[in-house]
Image (cartoon, rainbow, N blue to C red; front, side, top):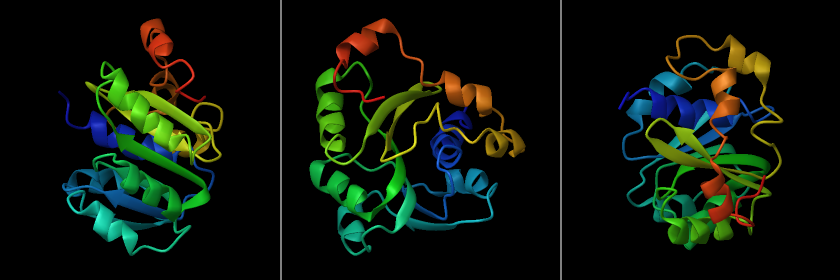
Length: 182
C-alpha cells in the first residue's frame, strides 16, 4: 500500500470540508505520520492525544473545543460520546472504522454517531476506508475547492479525489441503507 494515501485522506478530506477550521484534535498512537499533512495548514492549532488511553484523555477536554477531530482510536460508545461533546456545533470527524464488509460493527458505530452528527459517510482511503461524521458540512457539497486546489505537495489528494472517494458501490449502499446519512 502507498503509505501517503491514508494520512492525506484522513487530514485533507476533513480540513477541506470545514468552512474555517481553527482547532484540530488528533487521536493517534502514531501522530508523526500526519505531521507533514497538517503542516500544509498554518492557521489552526493541533492538539494530540494517544489512541491508547484516549477515553481518559478526552474526558479532561473542554466541551465545544474542536472544529475537526481526526481519530484512530477504537470507536466505543463512550469515546464517541466524548468526541461529540468536545466537537463544536459545526465540527467534522474523520475516523477509522471496521472494514465495510463488517456491516454489523459499522452499523453499531454509525448508529451511535447518528445521535450526534447529521451526516455520516464512509469514504475510500486507498486500501482502507474511513468514516466522516459531520454536524453541519457535507463533504461533497461543501468542499472548499480553493483550499483543496491550493494545497501543494500531496501525492494523492486533490479536489477531484475528494469528491470521488465518497462514491460507494450498490452492495455497500444496500447494506447500509438507512444507516449512512448523506
